Length: 477
Image (cartoon, rainbow, N blue to C red):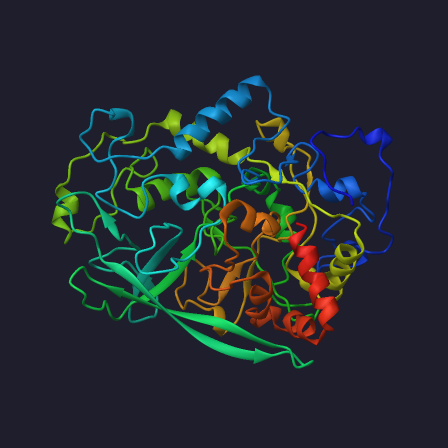
């Protein structure tokens, strides 16, 4: 067994166990502009284990595997990480309060802390029963204008807040119905996919109609600083918006507005609509927790929500720039857990099949970070997120029909796969895709459509043993 140990082995004495031609599908991933997705032809086992690079990987495989700081942080960095961690986990309370450093919750909100949705910095899930207190799912919503463009709902804005402080009405509740859709592999093996439908209701129980909704679970946090530090030109070089190579895959970058109004690459969120970790952080504070910042000074109250508009504030802003700095640093320096079982026969066979059926056309195995981050541990790292960070059309079955920026209702960013095999260990569930509809990795694959339909069909055509090997490989990430 080739498992990471509790300490880092010196690279000079590593056995250079090469997987031969196993990664050929990645290293020869030619693009329309002549570039390739990766440069190394045969990573060692140790390099494959180090998904977050030499400085961004943790060997922790337990319940806190996603909450570890990068080993390369210096003493000041470790202190800043610990402070950021405390702010990330603290519960905010209603203002006014004697705990003035953390009052200002709401007036309307979805969660009381960052960790309410990102428990142990991991992945959220949809509620499993009507009274489930889990806060891992939120609902974006819009109304469409006469040209089909999304606009904020006049009563609820862009996000549905199902909780509120005292004397302020919450916006309502979310009801989820799941319909089983049976299917069968070519070899006769049966499966079933759970197709969810969502219904928003007012506190009085009245359905909210004529809206488009986008349910989204909280993604895992680890590795976001590394992804942020991959040069934009590296990501853009992976794009093939016109499918000039004819492989049926036509990923494209999501260009969004930056701080100064310039056009920048979107990287984060299920539709890559957010360009930086800091923006993701401050938007979540405003929309999910109801905490204002210098970047987002306004509450998500609509004019008709007078109770929300008139509620007491916890300050102006409610979270100061220093706290945001610490949470941003903490988020950016969360390490990626090392791979397990690298080199084991089933893992290696599954990786080869994963590449041969075309999954790496979107789930790019290897990227290299830039050199100009103020955090040295993020620089010049060869990482293996299995994502190109591009938008791909995933077909009508996964569509939310709600455009987000330049992303259409059928387009989604390729989610990184690192850590996917530890979700059950860290978060106690195996719910995947943007709304958590998939109840296993296998179901997540079977939901793929659009540009990924060919890869899904080839997965279905595999013998059962090879399908299992693909899952084994993914569980090693």
